[in-house]
Image (cartoon, protein in one colour):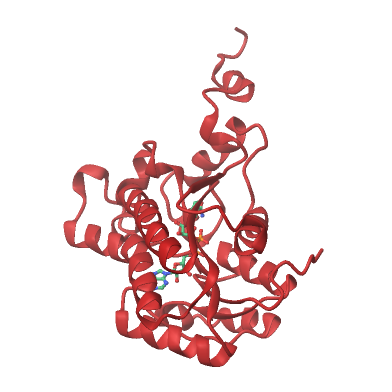
Length: 273
Ligand code: NAI
């Protein structure tokens, strides 16, 4: 159902790899709500070609950019303003990648060059894109930036290894840049801390199914889906949330505030006890 919440708004959506991606669902919802936007992803991800289907469905131009490259981000923001016909109202950062997780390294065995790559791709990229946007002065007043995070920024999930530090840094950058852009342009910057979600990045984490099922059993509302996350992002891009900034917003069905649930007690109780 559309409420035209984003009518007339222009955006940039990073991170739609395939139809499971959270960014894919956000793009579909933004389109339904009347926004126009550019889709972008790393040139390597483009080769899979899936994004063309989403571009066709939403009428969005595609501009490839590696989110760690200032040059490519500059061309992206300049291209987006030109193709969309004005300054940008919203940005979705939906980017995460850890070579250490990909190669199955435990926390004690992390390769430090890869660790830096994890931080660059998954966290510094938010700083880089906002610094580029600031330099080009291409964000509209009362704009909104959302980056996706995970509760491993605050709590230990052993198999999340260096991504935990990346998410902590991402949330910190959102606060610091949220202050700066709030002062300069009344632009808000928030992170949305999402439930475990079955996507390419999610499934890449060792023991993902157990994390997913555990979170689902703990949360009074159950895990939030990618579609529900898209609804929440739309609300944050809309004018209905103009004074929400510098926050890490839990979108997790209540998981983050539960100590234990009846379902987990039941799971842990020996049979016949
Ligand atoms: P996904 O694998 O569909 O999306 C990750 C995206 O990052 C891909 O589109 C990939 O091409 C892009 N990317 C990687 N390196 C890049 C680079 N150098 N430049 C530009 N883009 C690059 O997976 P998902 O789950 O949709 O991930 C989106 C965000 O949601 C990530 O930040 C992830 O950490 C976060 N998140 C995911 C959860 C899950 O359980 N799936 C839970 C909480 C947060």
